[in-house]
Length: 481
Image (cartoon, rainbow, N blue to C red; front, top):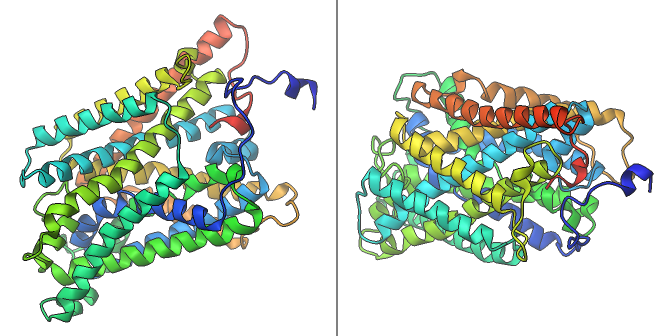
């Protein structure tokens, strides 16, 4: 160990120990599938179906293809650099510019906050419907969503970590809820009340051509395919990651897209044409309508909202845990103000980072609810996809740049053209042509969140230069999370 490494600060505290490699292929697969399923399919299926009509399965397939190409870059990088710092680590090793690394890391934080906020609104609407309020007001949804975020903060403050075994239970609940939707779709088609022929019908409410309509729908669908990248944070807890990570991640993506396509087909077959774009409750999602229309004589519709609540709550918790942990890590390394790196005595949970990310989420939910022309869920889910598409573009480029480093024996190597295709596709889906006019608010939300980060970075830079007489930069990027 060099002298520099010997004096490196322990950003996780003196009680931190080496991570145990306890994840085999089955647990890792369930973690990946559960992380991808999450809130995405509940939040976006209706909106993308409203853009392309019966071929709603196609945007899921295209989004899967783009995500899979990017997954190849992640697999090459995670087996070459098996540390749990993800995109920030790869960006730092590729470009070595501390501010760019910070922007990537803070973008990931923002994506976690917007994803959790999406889940919070989705959960609030379904919870109120589950308790008998079939048409909850926006004020009721807002208050419930804000209260839920405070509950998440309280749980986070108690120091709850990411439990893989608990994730298994929640994944099974998520899959059960989606299996109900698919089962109802099959049942409706089998009894002759569903129109399977609609799955080949293209309809655009704005008279857009097929290519542009699918482009817009794919950008919407992309929110449902994210989550696989979170698995790189489990690499240090995975048995023989070089061997099982590639196969398991790609299998998880494959399982998720099959489920999504079957759900989309069920939606199109069960719900009459013209009603898909206008669900009973836009914040609750279109899948509840499938249950009500497809099985009106069964009491499933009274249970389904609670299954949705259970399914998306874990997504919100994991995202807020990730966001607060990243803020804490950056504060510990003097990239953000040191005050954001304080921990509670005893529990050692990063309370100032949790308070900061919670306030950010509360403000985000409130502002978007009051000002957005589109639904809150649509605005926030689209912003999450926008932020992660930017991160994925950089990761694909970093994969190409880091080809200069030698590849360890047994490490995964993606075909050379895939990172290029991934970077181009992700960058293309970032453009305004991939969004409706009402969705342009996504750029404002993303810009506002990143502006907060840049201001904090500038304050830290001035403090470091003026008070501590030192440069601002990551000291231990390998242990950022």
